[in-house]
Length: 370
Length: 107
Image (cartoon, rainbow over all chains, first blue to last red; front, side, top):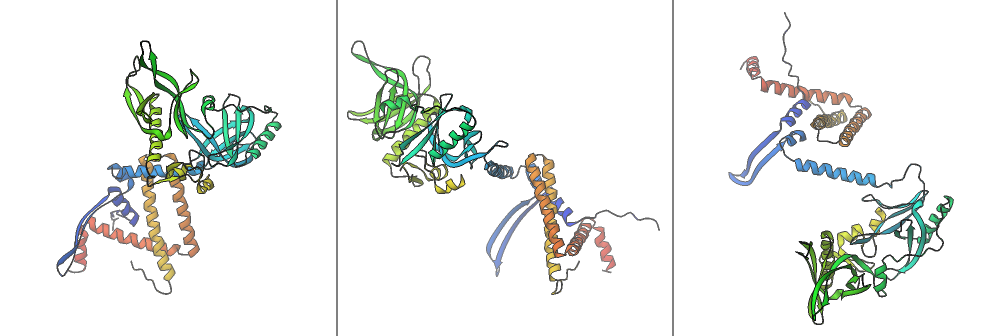
């Protein structure tokens, strides 16, 4: 008997599944459950099962695939980022909870994290999401200064200022400012770096220092054009755009004219009615510029003040002023809360996850995470 | 294939069956994962992670089989299942066999 050819259809469970998943399987079924010939429940089934690669090939579930993987990646990045980025061989001398005053354009807020004093530098690190909030090598530090201030919650706390050689000032609010100061001083002595004796704390905002009344603090400020009404010959008036600074404090909104060195326009926060932005030609080359119109109450009726700056700033200001007006005039929106420390109002989520942007308060849970 | 589970071989039978199914799922996942890797949409890091996870799963399953001494039972169940599938597929794609079978049974 000669050899018999055999069909090699050796096929296991996994091979079968592989084939099914590779090609994909579509089930389309209509089902009726009836009792005594009376249909009671109807089921219309459409199911497609296939390997993910096959699904993607046919453009099914692509968004979901991407989202799932992106989400996972973000989670992992956050977890990975949860470690403070220490250089090799860098030693941590002191670690303490603290916040750093961050100010950029109109955005100003206390950003909380962990303050590290290492053998090389001082930095503030936030764990989730991992971000370096401040990073200063000792070589940059010119002097240290501490100031006891009453914070918004009417409590006395110490603030630590790192005066830097480039003229900048880093404002820190650690749990124990004096301990941090000693640690930095000690380490800089070891490194043979000199610190100024009794440095003067430069006013962080020279203009604001001139007009702020006791208990008043700046919440927003930026360079801004203002449409000023000037007397012109012949007893009439004319409007001219002037460059200055717009400040929002906890008491009023004001425009400071640095050329004259005085506040030219102001209105109490309570008198603000409405803030809108619009595109306007400002004359000359300034066509189609964003203008912020602020409607406010005065004794002689409602008036409008016009400001102009960059587009982003206009939007920020509109939002900031709208917030002021809304906080005053309306009961809190449902998902808003007041900060337990200073009473500022903010969306609950924001307050819990990012802390209070006004006084730097952060929730105990967030504190643990950081 | 007959799977006899009684009081004496309760563990071997049940655990063997369960592990055989787990192995089949694992094999299927592995094949799909290869396809995804070849598909090219995964990043290097994802590929790395996927490979690591499948390897860990392999080790875990092997460990359980060793620990419980059910390696043979699992093998038996899988072989049995493979045979059944083989048989079914063979018959499905070769209608001739129906006739042969019918002939054999004298129908």
